[in-house]
Length: 357
Length: 246
Image 1 (cartoon, chains in turn blue, cyan):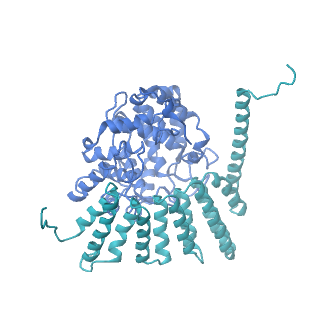
Image 2 (cartoon, each protein chain N blue to C red):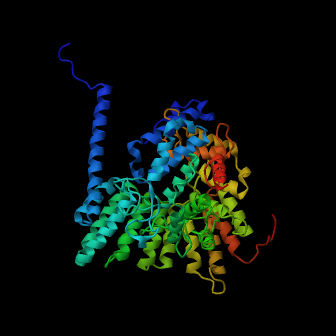
Image 3 (cartoon, rainbow over the protein chains, first blue to last red):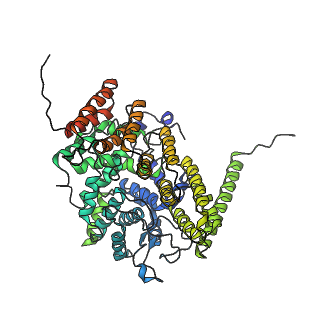
């Protein structure tokens, strides 16, 4: 649905980051979501992450005030612990859920609902959110999560997000790498196999797809490159020709902002997905920064705060966060610097390092 | 004073809307509670299918409910295997309506694959036709392209036929990058170089040069053909030489 943002957008609004509006937008996301979001009910953890990380980049986590502890408790309530009834299950379903929508009760293990297991993307965003909130991971069941990773990696090197019959692709390699990095334990990931899958997913155009045979895409390219960076295996994975081709494919995503595939419209979120990829590949300076900045700022919603994928459409949590993340890569004043591989503020990464010592 | 038509004030409208919202929420919660109750009681039956269908038709991305559905169908088919055609027929129909809601749903296409790999008489032609329809709506829908590749593998559609399909898509629109991508995968399969695994023959490459030149002469500003061209250049082993400079 279209909302005529641009008609309400003054020229000044198009060149300025509307910080306070975005702070309000993210705090609202944490309390109530409009009907349009109903398809995200099972993924509420990801919305929480976008809001928290968005506030963090805006250096405005104090906006959640006294709710910090209860949000941390909420996140931990989504953790799926090893079964108490069936030890043979081991860590099969462990990790974090997206929400308690399917569980019904405030269950903490798979025993209450056998279909309500952990999901890698929720585990990743849960851990990242805890870091952002300054938690010390003391309630995280590390061994269960790492064991679960082993069960989720397939022979071809990719990961599935859950043990049930489901998809597998580069997105979940990324989640697994983030989790391993944050928990500082790589025993759950066979890195060589994962890298082989990534190599096979690089296409004729040198972009990287969700998997072999599939079409190159800005999101999957980010997942692949960031995974390699987190594994510290970026050097030496691609031949010189393929590496240059990859950089080239990424740089050519820029039109004003960035698109995710050739001949697709530009979309705010790719200012992060592709921007961060270029940062990790060491060629971010090849982009035209003013056009990129201009596009993202125009996607702001001056009425409600937040950013949308295109200007003149409804803002949403994902594009709001990734738009800001993309601006942070540009060094936008008023935003904390973001880590291009983990997609959280450098401050949150610093907290992670402090936890280890 | 008299006979003034009662018009709901904005406050009253907001209240009415809130009431409606709460009623909807109540209904939704009741549905989910009913689903949980049946799962807890291990009642994996037709009623559970109906309940989950109700929720999934509005929200096809609720992956837990698809998990429940698959397990329920497995249980039902264990006791009455003869129902499989009816059950799966209904599921495929339902999935198509879900695709109308969200044609880019990972869960929906996954469920479709699940059904088709278990169907005793899978109608792959119908699946191909479904792909064609959705690609007509959005020629860049990669979920659909990926599903098409799955169907083609099972349906025994020849590489040549699919190569011809990319022809028709590119002819309709030179900037259909997804079609060019598919072509890049099909070319070495259709014309495999016996001396070098994964490479197309030199003749095939030369043919493709002609083909792609048509594309970028027609629309020199479209990047699809140029990406493909660059890839072809990288594949060939002979070197271009400049024979004359005019």
